[in-house]
Length: 99
Image (cartoon, rainbow, N blue to C red; front, side, top):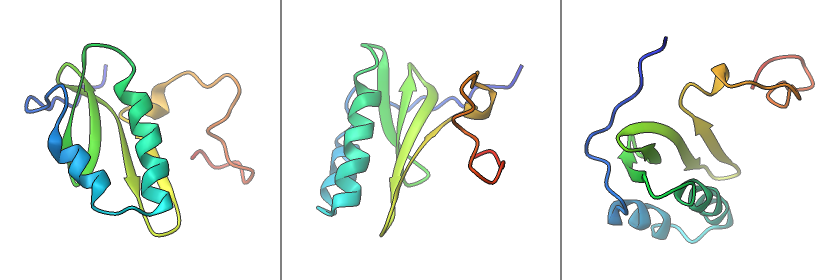
């Protein structure tokens, strides 16, 4: 079993996460915020913080997802996401490489 990424400083609603989103009003960051809002809505045990410079969502203190925004694209990632079932093979790009 893979060890969980524990982030004990995560809190229910971290003002630093909001400040990260508010620091840039560009369309890409707004798109990332919509995804992060979906992570926040996953349940009452979702906590958050800025980890490695990115808004990160946790279940309790176990990290499960994060977002980031760049000049032309946004990322959403999941801790240990490659180990999640993918019966539709949606993580596989047209080149055949896993994304």
